[in-house]
Image 1 (cartoon, rainbow, N blue to C red):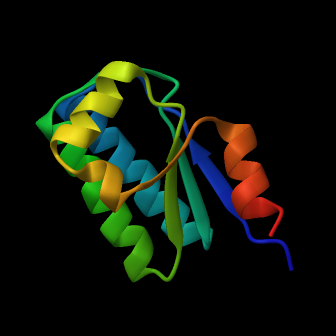
Image 2: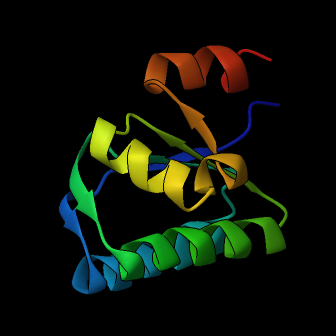
Length: 107
């Protein structure tokens, strides 16, 4: 059986306003029964602390529902933030959607 994958693709600044929107989307995805969630950050230019908090709470919520959350397509600035906060060790991050598909969906 192929797992249900849902993709969220925020854009611009992932700040307090967008963080609330991401949390809401995650709640809806969990309610729909998706087992895999991919947050594609290709169009996100910057993440502040509330945006990072939203990603962490999304990860916890998805795991609590028995699913898995992944991140892909982060830019250099966002990667630096993830490395400084050690979030690169918390999240499984893929270079892009193709890498995610090869590693997760193909298995």
